[in-house]
Image 1: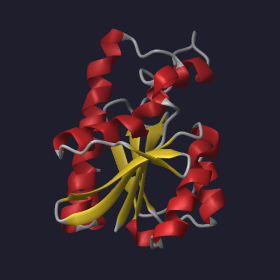
Image 2 (image 1 turned 180 degrees about the vertical axis):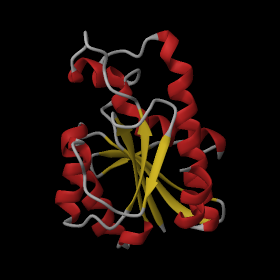
Image 3 (image 1 turned 30 degrees about the vertical axis):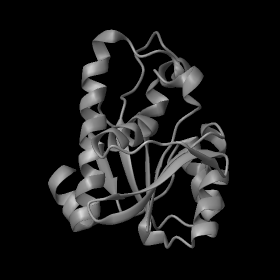
Length: 185
């Protein structure tokens, strides 16, 4: 069973922000595979389903970004998820908008949500898909950039990144992470 976690902040207030790219990818996967994310447990909204013949748990932690690891570890412990079956999806300011990066492992970098996940798992050896949101312009500070509303003119390019990340998850489930990295990085 795969644990597929999109990082973000509760959607009522943060739905239209760059920091919710992980949630957007989960929502797009759910839409494509006609999955309704209705369950609530472990400080998350989630659903158990099948995607490309793989049993998956789609998760959107509701803990706020900086403590996402609290929700992730509860799913890992309860469902006995192996590290090689964890996929974390999140935004990254160091990647150009519309682009993605897939990695098998690595540090959390400067992303507080990933720092929390790494802290609670006490591991860095799990897959991650980073969705590019780019750096803020000189007039915008980092906080405004990641949790401020997305300007209309930027939505399309960010949506391209979300769609690429969705395809990366599908490819990973079908053919493994190496194939996903080779085809989509």
